[in-house]
Amino acid sequence: MDKILIIGAGGQLGAELTLALAKVYGDEHVIATDIKNGDHTAAFARFEVLDVMDAERLAALVDENKITQIYHLAAILSATGEKNPKLAWKLNMDGLINVLDVAKEKQLDKIFWPSSIAVFGPTTPADLTPQHTIMDPNTIYGISKLAGERWCEYYFQKYNVDVRSLRYPGLIGYKSPPGGGTTDYAVDIFFKARTGDAYTCFLNKDSYLPMMYMPDAIRATIDLMEAEKSHIKVRSSYNVSAMSFSPEEIASAIQQIIPTFKITYEPDFRQAIADSWPNAIDDQEAKRDWGWRPQYNLDSMTADILHHLK
Ligand code: SER
Image 1 (cartoon, protein in one colour):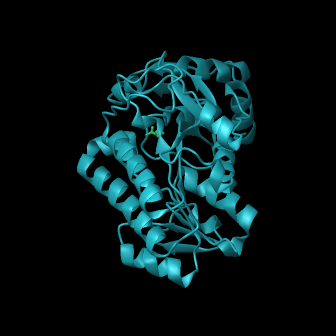
Image 2: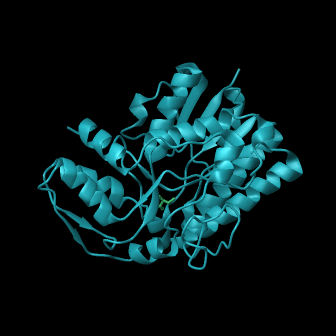
């Protein structure tokens, strides 16, 4: 029987993924954890406070609950990471290694750990970025994700830890706020549009970035985790792609539904981060190995979000 521990369940992805996993595996089999109790944690059937830096408590929770799988989502993202690089490095690396070690010692079935398009950098080919290519990230978040990918592959090869990973693009949802990333504008913009406010975007109007609507991200994650072990050929992290757009294009998609919506542009330090990331990602290996297919594009996502935010 699968028994799942989620670390970082209060975050943008965790809040939705936890509820999706509880639907698949049952409330009793999903234990949500986060560093603190927050707005989202009340929605979880089972919740425990856990700081992933506390390896002893992590091991105790795994034992007490007979955990077989961990989804380790806690991290400091790209924009926040630049404000305190050493803290971002420490949390992102030590947290992952604590999880990999507990998986190895207790012979857990599977681990999920998210990587990101942030593993790419300024000299990576920006259009249809291949799975295997130049990786020269220049944010501390990207550096920690690239190092994390190497740790995951290392634990798989040396210790047979079945750790699986996706390089998420910017994730866009309306149920839970994003936490300190460069792609957050594509979430904030919908809330401004819905309340009738103008939006001041912190990126330039023509900054293309790869993005994905949350229902696709949840499905990609669960599909990857449920795939046959022998089908998982990439043990660093899979490129996954759904759509790419610029701030100008998402504003125009919103204006199709809310014609009075207005946007202005005041790029800040996040512009340099966006400039170092790809425009669009080639995800043919995910498609081939475990059947990945996105369902939402910019227009269908925009219509769905604005419908739900009414
Ligand atoms: N959405 C993340 C960020 O902007 C990228 O993984 O930091």
